Length: 234
Image (cartoon, rainbow, N blue to C red; front, side, top):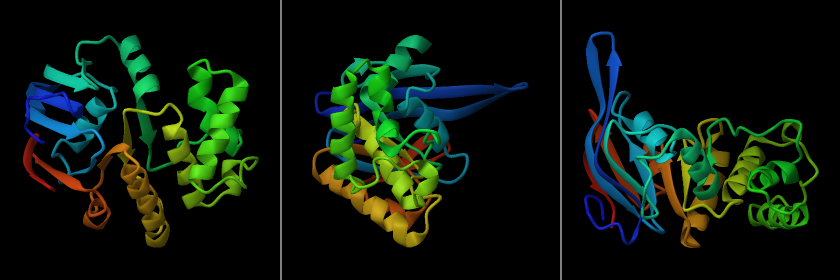
């Protein structure tokens, strides 16, 4: 569906998106007119060399920044015009983040880390505890609920991060180099988990520089010089 103007079936749609940074007297065109869509239920890997625009794309996808011009539709809503506090609400309600460095709170247990987004959404504690336990079981950590991050392996910590990212039932999961801090065997386990979640209907957009990791996605988007160089997939 990449390049389509139709947002009906898209979790994400970008239309003529530009992001320009001013560095001294120079303009850097980090994104130079991106028009692309990510269908609901798809699994995308965004790839490209350093300076291709991957990080800028990641920040815009995650509502961490706004474009200089163009439109970004998330679940049909144009979020490119929103203010910072509105973008924060969008992130909390509609997005799930998986980071290379896990970003777990060391003082909290597995259950409490998974519950964290629900706390900010104002969930009832009993309901959020039930949701956290359900998600811990979904990622194979039902017997680690009372453990803290330093008592877990890297792979287990990333599974907690995946469960936390799923807590708010996001429109899509945004994974930033999700296996970057893991050995190859553990990395494959995490990618198998993401593929399983995608098979269950979850939309996943992953930024990676590793071709082997990208091969787990159903689609690939290759960037160069702030533009989409090509897309691959069914």
